[in-house]
Length: 321
Ligand code: CP
Image (cartoon, rainbow, N blue to C red; front, side, top):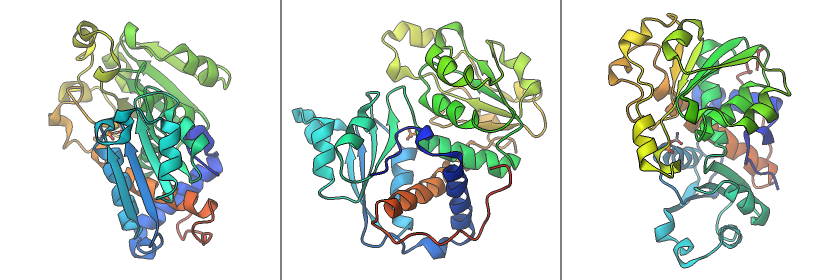
């Protein structure tokens, strides 16, 4: 049974295929509107979410399927002590595919090891968020026309920001991608990401706390929220939460074609005055997430033999994918 727990569970060829399918869905939504008729997606969200849960659910509805939903541990039998493993076995009796978010790192893998249907990790603690990365990749491709030859600034909470970890893993597989890691000392990218991804693959990266200094060189700026829910100490959170605020004044330092991404939710790190700047791409990212989740649901249901196999999408991936 095929699951997607980490973005590295997908090869670059498969990601290229998902990008092509998503672009075809954008071009011909009616061709996809009945493909999942009679199929059920279970969204098991044991941690808050707006975008990921709703976009998975919108994705399944737009494919003609149905949705079963758990929203929060308190309203499920997790509150009575049911394990993730048992939950996965139970939900496998009702649904065809699971999207799960959980506050504990590794929970999605436990679910996958016990489910008899495909499991998609919709965020596990501070670890990974592969479908956010799929949304990010489609946005980068649509905005920049390529996934290689990019200087990518990642700014904010690089320690707990699981979207950053997944995006670094994904973009490191394309040619000539350089990273500028912009964070306070306390929120630097964990060593395990540098040691397991950047260093072995020889990826160029620099670390700095100076956003203004980094801005002029960037093709993309990926802003992130300081992850309050992962802090043990409120005092530390309050001290660090406003480390970076992107303002129109700072945007004057950036290239005219720099693209600003953010996985959202935003707290204070991007001024709303930037929302109408053509370089602000974070709401486009939200919409792209739905298309990529549609493509992923289709791929996994087909591989599980729950849907007939695909015809080749009409839209070809760009050459760089
Ligand atoms: N980007 C993201 O994961 O948003 P939600 O927490 O609202 O799902």
